[in-house]
Length: 412
Image 1 (cartoon, rainbow, N blue to C red):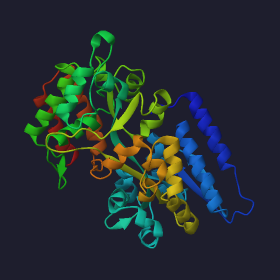
Image 2 (tube, one colour; image 1 turned 180 degrees about the vertical axis):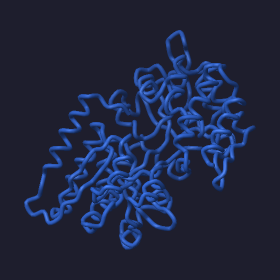
Image 3 (cartoon, one colour; image 1 turned 90 degrees about the vertical axis):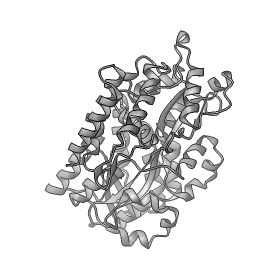
Image 4 (cartoon, rainbow, N blue to C red; image 1 turned 30 degrees about the vertical axis):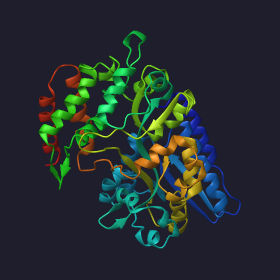
């Protein structure tokens, strides 16, 4: 999500203010690196710091916001040259790199003795662990789901959101009216398109990587890309701008009424809720299932300990994020879904129908694909290959061949 200059200044000022707060009785001071940047993220972070300060008055937390694109470089530099923080943010996709550079401390013993572990099922720890050791405590998740215009569905006589790809296409066609500038689906064909391209391929039965080797099923992948690209090329149920639309464009399209459905995750709930009325104008639904698999991602993020100088205080901080009150505070500020099952049982979630789709997705959602070279392959091969189909420069068969060749090269 892009941050305006004004938002950046607000974020910087807020973090500086919070960093200057010190308890008169502080017995320990720890540092925390993170890549929160938006105003909603900062609001959630400051609330957690406030709650933590009340629960642990003897510990002071000083945090530093680092741009997401610079985060790994700064951690790497700190590992090599010194100057590590006590604690820092850890996302599943980066765990392998962080452990490979020796940035994280094994916290398995503390986790296994922690009563809060009971509220974090085994699948929460998968992205926070490596080779049998735990390196971070899960805090929140980005849960894939679908936003849909409830008012449009009702006006069109559609009983509810689509549950399968077939129903999805039917709904798209019924909700599309180019004369009114309205389309059934806001397709992300620009930056970040690769995520949904890969998901659709898996939904049609094609794996991506298996046992460390490229495993794309060409026939299934071609069928998947034909289906997905036809939403633009044949069915014309997505905006004409789709080949270049990234996050900002698909969000604006949905918020302004240009599109009736959009695929994203829980992290965009606050933005949409600020523009449309939940339960009346829009609602959320589980991602529709493909012909071979039901695909939706659940990407967990957490916090780890980077050095053991103040390890007891550091542990108190990273484990606090896994507790219910911290999880709810972050959810209310950002829409980032709790990893803790205790938080999921809270009335603020159970009694809010907007969260039902995310709770249901936790039962079957998959972790993002994580393998060496995944990011480069996704961004530099999958994205342009799919765009080339939309712009008529290649066929689905040619695009899949390009993806397979690129994946094999990435895994060498």
